[in-house]
Image 1 (cartoon, rainbow, N blue to C red):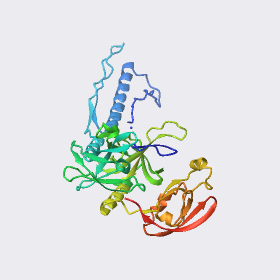
Image 2 (image 1 turned 90 degrees about the vertical axis):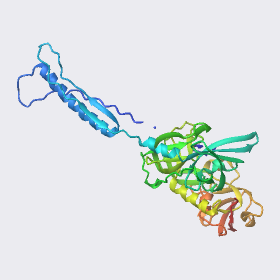
Image 3 (image 1 turned 180 degrees about the horizontal axis):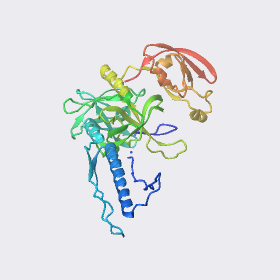
Length: 409
């Protein structure tokens, strides 16, 4: 699960309480004068009215909450200094409602299809082990997850909900354009999760997250609401404008898991959380998921291609310029665009004369900015296409044409 502040990406790695209280007894108001009632009779009438009010409120509460047995038993006041006989005994009122739990049912469906993914990778300090989650999407054993869970790893293992361990192969990915990848395990025991309509989600709607946080709490369930839709964030140089915001608890290991609606359908993939604001103030309850519509579009493309989607490439590494980045780079002549950090020898960019230190300000007629990063423009183009590129080289404007290559596997 990615953790972010408002300024830059971090490392890749909710009940309402309803309290009902009976209102205070209102005084009896008469339109014509009449003799005062005995205290016992007045108390009896007030008790009768109070019972009716409580019974009606309990019936309404029971219908709204959808569960439990509400039983109200009331008697008239039986005491008094005048020795009058007690008032009539009130009838017992009971309301019975069938109790159901949509959250539990949705979670049960999700847990049957969300797997744990473990991986190892070598680092300077030794071998590092990581864990993430994945969602089984078809009967052929295809599993969709976040690309950052599986890329750069040496070993991959998938643990099904019943504990069965299976070897997995990486079919393909779409990094860095989208943080999505597809694995495959042998068909049979893996149960595919029903795909829901992420476009039908509404703010305030209850959602359930299922994943494997902290490498030890397999099949964990958390519930929350849809806090917002079509949220915009820039992740790994890509501006995303369709993210689902939720306050369901998400932690390291939830990455690649499932966000479910109350039908138990897959509507999103938890991907990252915001932990800290620009002012360094801690932030809680702001998580983001990629909508299932985009997840499935990319996954089906990877499966059809049998590998990474055929995205174009300029053959270079770059850094998107933001105001903060530009302030730290005093030698850059402009405050927007993509700073070329390195050019692949023999690649498309090198062939067109692009050099390290150049700033790409326009690509294929589109201006590169903080709201429109280079990758967002590039993903709309095709490998083999020749496009104009405008460069700023130490204040000098240069225009070249680049025949786009195909990104590396």
